[in-house]
Amino acid sequence: MRSGLKGIMKKGLGEMGFNAGGGAINWFPGHMASATRAIRDRLKLADLVIEVRDSRIPLSSANEDLQPQLDAKRRVIALNKKDLANPNIMHKWICYFDSRKQDCIPISAHSKSSVQKLLEVVEFKLKEVILREPTLLVMVVGVPNVGKSALINSIRQIALSRFVVQEKKKRATVGPLPGVTQDIAGYKIAHKPSIYVLDTPGVLVPSIPDIETGLKLSLAGSVKDSVVGEERIAQYLLAVLNTRGTPLHWKHWNNRKMDGIRFESEEKHEYNPKDLRPNSRKPPNVSDVVYVENLVTEVQCAMYKTLAEFNGNVEDENDLENLIEQQFEVLQKALKIPHKASEARLMVSKKFLTLFRTGKLGCFTLDDVPETNTVS
Image 1: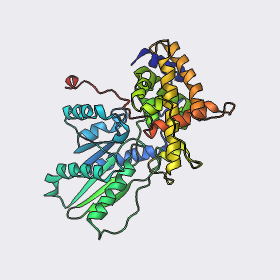
Image 2: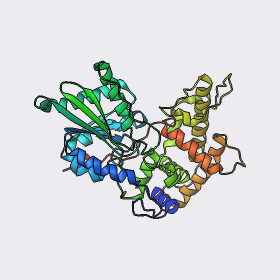
Image 3: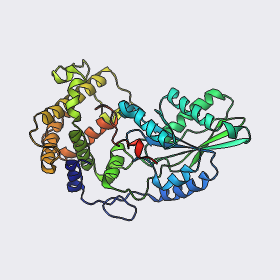
Image 4: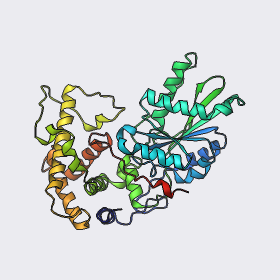
């Protein structure tokens, strides 16, 4: 880890403990503890497990407590939200998991064609079992907010298109907050043989090994913002972007953005960046799209300018901290937050995180790909 980034995390967060036993960070609800026990019991009966992970954090979003049991099962690792991850290194992750003899496929849970490819892999791996078992059980597991329920809903839609006669069943609950699915629910997706897919609550490991892993999970939304604090998460995101030099690359994405050209909308917008989420009930109109594009342009220009004109060293803790403080100020203006607004820094953090999480600032992978030649 870069020294500047490490220093910022320590200074801003202290020695926070991401654990179930207390400390500054404590997020392991009782319903998740009971769900973990239920998952362990049902894993014994599962013929195949779909382990859903976040493509942006393929390692950090793994549930380490369940890995021994998962390693002993037929398993497919589904790297969800591939549209938000860096596409240039996705093949490296596939090679990494292949080197560990683990089947892995990048998916987008909201894409029918993407989920169809996942099901083809699942059916292939179950081919031998199908010949001798009349009923098969597929489990979907993963940490909170990696898209398990969205995947289940897509699988069910595909199943209904295949088997129209199938009786109506409720969809798995889907929401933007981690831990929203609290009850284990099952869905019959095929006949002859009967194949059931169980949607399980995400179970975050009760002890996260280090601060950075906890922050990555928080940034990806697997830990509620209120637990860690939006300002701390935004500070970490800014530190990551700066140490990687990401804002400097934004200049080449779109000349319009750096030339200061703006398109004005003819309509008055009343749009909240939160509505950018995939399951939003309020689709954007032309005015909203233009507003968001200009907002992103302002943010990228502000970030590019501050880093390009920065004379310090991002590897130095104090220099990096000063840069981040400056960026909070320019982001307040770029995000059109009133100068005297109370809790302005919190508002900046929330809007900035929303732009990142919805992919408006680009596609990022936070985990580093391990060297495959070190894998035994």
